[in-house]
Image 1 (cartoon, one colour):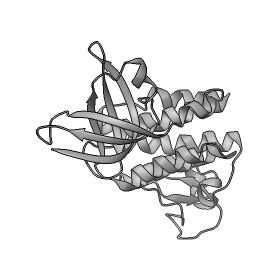
Image 2 (cartoon, helix red, strand yellow):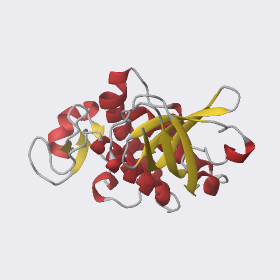
Image 3 (spheres, one colour):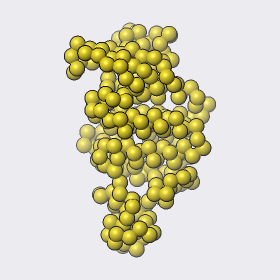
Image 4 (cartoon, rainbow, N blue to C red):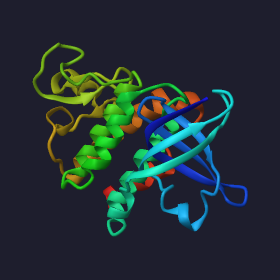
Length: 237
């Protein structure tokens, strides 16, 4: 069995003396693992870096086998940000979350296109806002999208400043006031888009992090990845 596809490299770790075990998010074949013979060599090392957009060829005798992978570079995103630790941290966090949250071998074109769009958007000034919206999008493509359009209690659309930590629905200031210590705060940019201040970004990450843990990672017995925690620490500093 074999296929060719576009892919973003999520992770690569050494295997044996000279090979790599890689995890790929592909355009049409979902998240897929594979073995790269010679992947640790000097000639191939730069190719197999997290965040790279690749054209890959996967081949195995049976569909459920690990399979071997060959790749050609389309775009290398990480080298562009080597002098920008914050953007590099965001790239690492997005790849790590995709690797841990997405199921194996389940096609998800929305997840692939969303990750690729975020990586391409990292050059923008408002990339922290784009990152938080990318996490919102990841929740959505996994089936856990938040409803921030109307108040869960009144049905109104004004003064939405809270989110229910159980339902992921917005709550207005008046309806949420008696329970404000139990609710998550809803920063305005999550609904309106656009750039946001550093405190708003951290607040937005608290929201998305809560639901990624609650709905996706905790059922697998996993915490949020360390790369994501490092990004939050960097943005909070």
